[in-house]
Amino acid sequence: MKTKLCYTSLLLFVTTFMVLPVQANHKDKQVTHAQQAASMLQRLEVIKQMDVQSMSAEQKTGLKEEVQTIHKNLKTLDGGIYLSVGAIIIILLIILIIL
Image (tube, rainbow, N blue to C red; front, side, top):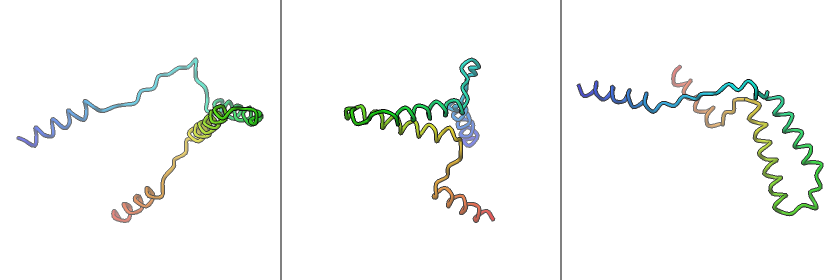
């Protein structure tokens, strides 16, 4: 009886706090990944053409942070799957244990 109560409460807990991602469809504001990438690359070109020597230190750090975030966003737009070396080793060990 206790196990049934435990399983029931566990099931209730899991279903109560389960989070499902929901995406809204904004057909009028849809921008493709190619358009986003093109605008980011265009911004990088504008930054490259700026005269950095005449800027203050705060402006230089702001531009550096902007360039870094643009590079991160471009990497995420690629949509590739990235696995660390540790994850690959664990996957291989699990496969070897199963076989």
